Image (cartoon, rainbow over the protein chains, first blue to last red):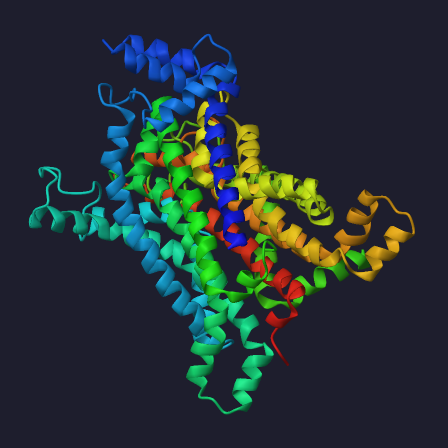
Length: 331
Length: 283
């Protein structure tokens, strides 16, 4: 319990510093991004005084001192008010994020879970059959695949499977003539559009899980308790699954919980290649249009999700691993 | 000379890392001798644009009429230098912070560990993109800086964990009683015993630096006028290389980035074996 309280304290501290970093970044940069931003907005037509105020507070244009700006910044954050997007003008940053978030959560969420399950399974298999042809094939393919620039792999996949052979659509999250709704044809179209991006993410991310699990499992297989279990004559399958893998999977579980936090940031480059309507693409369009309010809002969302997921990962490892529970604030 | 060979021996003995070493050596030599190897100058824009692969242009030409193969050969310089510079910088920062935080207990450790944790948690690519987007000048130095800022924490955490276990060893206590200063103890006594971990974190940092640099340049956050593999991908994507059938322009740079990354990962297998003898094949 003391450990969890201590972790919760770190969670709040981390959140605070990440949000503060988000506050400081545009203010520390030379060239005053905020002035540039406001000048750009002038050409966009009428904005409510409230919207102007929000932008001033978020990007640091006001004439009050830094500390007061910082307080105002927190007030805006608690109101979930990140100002108005420059690129999608009359719309607020929050509405843009709300629109993009479900796409990313579903696509990246599902692929992250799948990738963890398949990769870890293959890791167990290749550690268990270490040195066999199967192990060498799996390990070397994934070693190569995980050092791809995955956006590059995605472009090749688009070229071969969408552009030349037309098996899959080449871009977008759904057929362009459709209007988003909860009808069967729309969902079917969305699923169909997500297969290719999902596949490319899977191919490039499986390797990490496989390698991590393989290494941990090899270490676990060398432990004395595995030797003892083998000496007792337990069946090999039981040895692999309930003795070695069960202990070796702990670090993978922690990374898995952490990677769920990264889901929100989306696969920026893959979404860009597929013009997928998710968070990654939104961040890219924010960056390429120098849309600082949108950038800040997205980064804030990402950071909050990641920090919370990180905390959950800690909780999970306490639940799964009694050694940490007893170790107090050690870890 | 013999001592250099002695260092290289474990890398050569492991078959996987031997392959990695050979690939890396070929790439470094290509980068050094680029002017002799490349068939044309990368700045020569006099060729017809968007030619497919042919005998005169093995990988075709770009939209601006440059020879892709020559660009690729010259581009290896920039990609190798940025990748390694960022890898080294991130490892150095991680090394200093990790070692000091692991050796010292109390407030200094708490503060440094806290920084390590914050930077571990913030996702790398979004942070890189944001910092690069705010920056007024875009270029290789910015990319190295951004990758260093976002990439040092992994190494720091691993090294810190190792130092906390070495801290209580007898030889460290002996050094302390002999009156050695803390920096001497940390960097002369402890660090040599974890050199394989340092090497592993360097290789890891270099791989992510190479991929990170390629990603940033692909997004157009590098200097698009510099010739590197990442900017080649940027230009190829933005001039619709695939739609025009000039697939080689897009395929080749990404493939070489993947090969370079793989080479470093392969070399890392030998380092892993040194650090963890259990991974070594029995018999």
